[in-house]
Length: 239
Image (cartoon, rainbow, N blue to C red; front, side, top):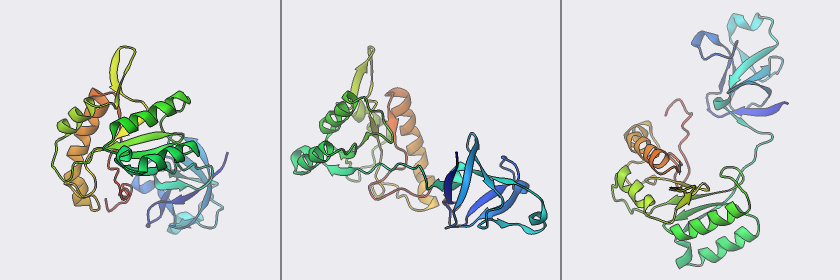
């Protein structure tokens, strides 16, 4: 089965002679903005026919007789057969008209929501999704953010807060986070920033510890470096 792909990085995507990440294995580049047909080869690799005109071959290696090159999945975005979940981002929905809008959107078929501060509303949406037999991911999901208003709370403070809310459920006698809910930590401007390599280096110890606490201690999901205004391009060589 073939899929259409395009590079994520403005520098293009490296094409390799074999499905291995080695510097001397790079034989061509798929330029930014170009598209290619690819076939899944094995875990995390795609096979691209070399006959495609968009490929830029390197030097003397261009004279080699090849049928395929290989590209890593993380370097490209899939253009065909890609499903995108569109959802609502809501602040304190039960105390405003946003809650009514959210419920109307749910009735119309929307199944992705970001809820700020209102744990009960987030839980209610997640319970409705669970009752439909949906699973977290492309089908559905609720992301919960705790509005901390710039307070430099620690990963432990975040985890303790989540543990004391209605985001938690009891399954087979074990108390854990609702399987249709993911949580996030500090927003982009709360403490650390997010749009430069220096910001991310400063932020990552917090993100790593909170992820470990949410996943390991609470049995939940953590959306790392996920922000209200978008996410940094973590695949960019600059970051």
